[in-house]
Image (cartoon, rainbow, N blue to C red; front, top):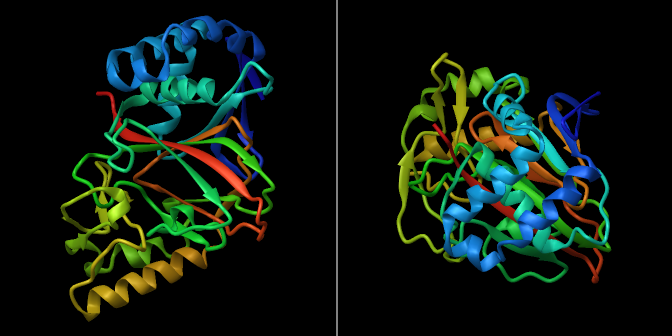
Length: 302
């Protein structure tokens, strides 16, 4: 554990690849004034304001935060961090957390348009009852390991997820898997079917009226595997593709290398979308269950 510029930095208890970044109270206190300068409507309609609050956050850490999180998220040996206020208090409400998430995201890149909500971010609830058309809101179904952006044309380099609030929650832990830890990666990566173009669609709630084609596996500049996959949206065109996807799904879900973590309210998990997969364990049934999440995903600033 080390402290720099109002930040406490440590390795995650369950994985050396995931870095914890706690923002000390002194930074949070000093953020309140610059954050209050812009309401959420301004952030949604005037993109430059998002960079303004990101700079306010970075300046308060003497520009250490931007360097730190970019070094983590772009490094294949890590590629993931969890960041949030060290202590939650009454001054930190849901609006503050949206702004903090926005600031962190804009220190690493430029968010994609989220077609589900028509904004640069999405906020959504997971509750006891659900009539949605995807696993995203189904509390009692395991959300299998996947990456984001499989069905859109935009580049999706990274993903940020913030836990805004939760009540009456048991279970629902976050599951993460790094490709380089996955026991079956070499086998699936070297299967030629995984390099074929697959058709990827999406349910109506995503508000995407087109389909895209791309393989499950590709390679980075160093020849290391990258993955773009989610179980619900590929449309296999033949038996080979269908059986490959089943083998892939089974191999991911049976991995003993998954990192299971319970994200604290107010915290964000940010991961490289090419070599980290994420999912969620089922919740324990409770009619009063409620969790609100925020999602931002986008591309790196060059």
